[in-house]
Amino acid sequence: GCSLGASKRFFTDFLQDLPTPGTGGPTFDTSITSNITGLVGKTVKLTCRVKNLGNRTVSWVRHRDIHLLTVGRYTYTSDQRFEAMHSPHAEDWTLRIRYAQRKDSGIYECQISTTPPIGHSVYLNIVEPITEIIGGPEMHINKGSTINLTCIVKFAPEPPVTVIWSHNRQVINFDSPRGGISLVTEKGVLTTSRLLVQKAIQQDSGLYTCTPSNANPTSVRVHIVDGEHPAAMHHGNSATLQPPALCPLVLLTCGMLILMNI
Image (cartoon, rainbow, N blue to C red):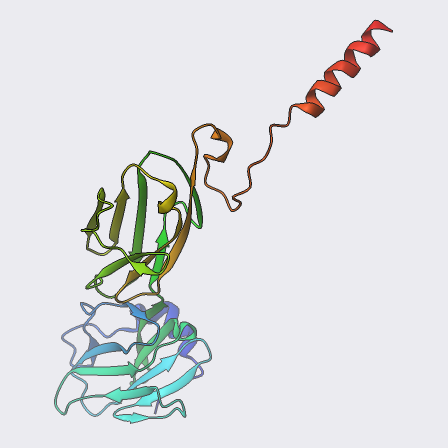
């Protein structure tokens, strides 16, 4: 049988319980990755490879609530997203989780019904793709300078096929008469897409949106300001120009001089 009551203990010292290879007892193939990252809404698979299983059974247990999920090829949870997968005579015992959720993150243990049971833990991390524009959500750009917007996509299972930029909800046309607009996209574990708009004019102000094909879009609002308003040249959450705080300082200085003269 599969002892659940002691499974917490096996989480911390299961390595001490592993039989010595060559003794004929079942062993885990520890070359299989024990850190899995999956995406929200997608399917993830946790695989445990067991050698010399014999007539024992393999179970998957979720550590968060010590919940028995599968035994052999049978699933023992009412959550239909979980399913045991195994091909006859194969060494792999897989726990498949469909429509993964953030709450599924945590430690899962593959257990063999030896006496006492032995286990191998796998850590699952469910993440959502994140899209962000550096310097957002508001940017103030000096008229005549270059608008430089960098969009970053991370935690995606693969690089996005496309990254589309739009201005005021209209897809940007790089061949427009406006000219001076270019895009550089570098794909990888971290995908960056850099939009450059040269010689900024007032018509370039507004909402810029970066839309990767496999992640949520994100936007930044660009304000084009005249050069005589350097106070607006900052990355902030407000487009309001603040007047210089000189008056209180002058009054304070005058007050101090009057006091000193007295």
